Amino acid sequence: MKPVKLETNIIHRGDCREILPTLPDECIDLIVTSPPYADRRKDTYGGIPPDEYVAWFLPISQELKRVLKPQGSFILNIKERVVEGERGTYVMELVLAMRKQGWLWTEEYCWHKKNSYPGKWPNRFRDAWEHCYHFTKQKQFKMFQESVMVPMGDWAEKRLKKLTKNDLVRDESRAQSGFGKRVANWIGREKVYPTNVLHLATEVTNKNHSAVFPVELPSWFIKLFTQEGDIVLDPFIGSGTTARATQNLGRKYVGIEAKTEYVTLANEELVSQRKLLEKAHDPYRAKERTQK
Amino acid sequence: MKPVKLETNIIHRGDCREILPTLPDECIDLIVTSPPYADRRKDTYGGIPPDEYVAWFLPISQELKRVLKPQGSFILNIKERVVEGERGTYVMELVLAMRKQGWLWTEEYCWHKKNSYPGKWPNRFRDAWEHCYHFTKQKQFKMFQESVMVPMGDWAEKRLKKLTKNDLVRDESRAQSGFGKRVANWIGREKVYPTNVLHLATEVTNKNHSAVFPVELPSWFIKLFTQEGDIVLDPFIGSGTTARATQNLGRKYVGIEAKTEYVTLANEELVSQRKLLEKAHDPYRAKERTQK
DNA sequence: GTTCCGCATGAATCGATAG
DNA sequence: ACTATCGATTCATGCGGAA
Image (cartoon, rainbow over all chains, first blue to last red; front, side, top):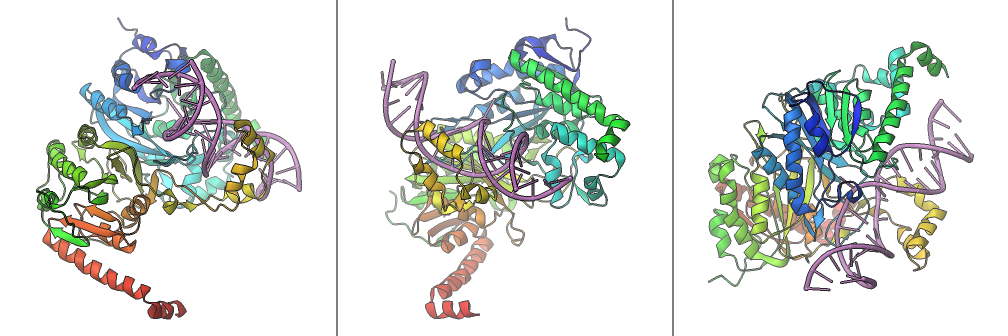
């Protein structure tokens, strides 16, 4: 029998194949995750071989379907590795298998990695993009397109670009005081809907975790598919990027991570970020910082 | 019995399922094409339903494999249509089926359409990218990477003026081959290799043909995979974009198109473009134009 | 307070070499 | 023969310290 209550703003320590069954049915509004790619992250998940990848993932996606609310969404960030000179087919096979499992493959977003890994090979160029598959349980699902609208013109890219701890605080304080230059720029600009191509750089500064997507990636989907107070799940949360994005945006997170160091690290970062957020919302401190 | 001789710089009028068998074996250096999408271009190919698409295309790709030289490449530009709220799976199924047919799926290039078609839907944004699958017959194939190099990012200008200590150290730690060697490669370098993401605007001028890619798209692949004098095939050539790209770059084209109007239109454009090219190569006229 | 510059590093891939 | 390891190749980004 499944538990009735869901604990939020927590990162579970363990294999998601064991943790997921302990979550209640239909309690999650959005799942955003980047599972270990085939033959990667050997230290954590044993490096799943490409030909076993689908069989490994299907039980997980089955559980994800169970815990997702009917109107929820599942964003799967993944990329096929080159296997003996060819692109591996396990990603395609996974999508086809997940449809048979009952998922609807609603859309494929393209993440353009502006700073792709360098290198040169005789038969290919640097790989600068990854898939973000959008799965749903129903044709009707929650989507808030206005929340990710971007101003027309050159400014749009910068806005999406960066939300580090410090920038976050700075933006918050300026927005509150109303004097932020950037905010002023925004006003009066024509806003447009984005496309299904996201231009974001990978995170290179995070030294503790090798496989991070930039915080803007989950942030974008969280804004698009959830409202404040909604619950976001990441079953392979690593160093906690999805949780930080979630906390930033006033949503609740549920994370799962098998590697102990990552859990510790993620929790530390989340606490420090929470403090910064609280400071930013404290009017006295915000004023203090603005005057500096 | 197959013909021995191949006629080039011609657009055949007819269904490629009938024309392709008349071409000799292994006579083509590069195939670039954008086939009719499922349920599109009903007038020409009868609007292939998504669930029949793979069966329809496989005999064609079989013939394409026959006419392609062993070291040649096949670029397939395609995008899955939305079918009842979901992305159709026929493209994935096609790739899997073509591998079984003996093709190697070497790479997937991403064409980012900078000016995507406007529109708004409740469950998705504007579609701003398409697949360009790269198939080959062998792991060894012709590729001329230098021909598509792009200007370096701004970062390089400052950085390379002064070679940092760390550049040398990192170099030494990796090989005892002498630290100056690789650094020398960088000095004076103005161009870098591109990635597998192509940023090109769609063509808006050509209203006579529904499935046009911009001439830069075939041009890029033609430069990358062929040399002057090589032969490029497009079995769904439409208004002749691939032929114009080919002619421009001093290669030879073989086109196939079922719709008579397109053939006429394409040939007219090709003739007028050829005249311009000849003028440009005529020394007297070239000088005249330069002085202007 | 900006701007500039040094610098480490990243979900990569191939081919050669070693077991 | 077949697998595992290792060196070589390459470029955009953001942080931190300096001007």
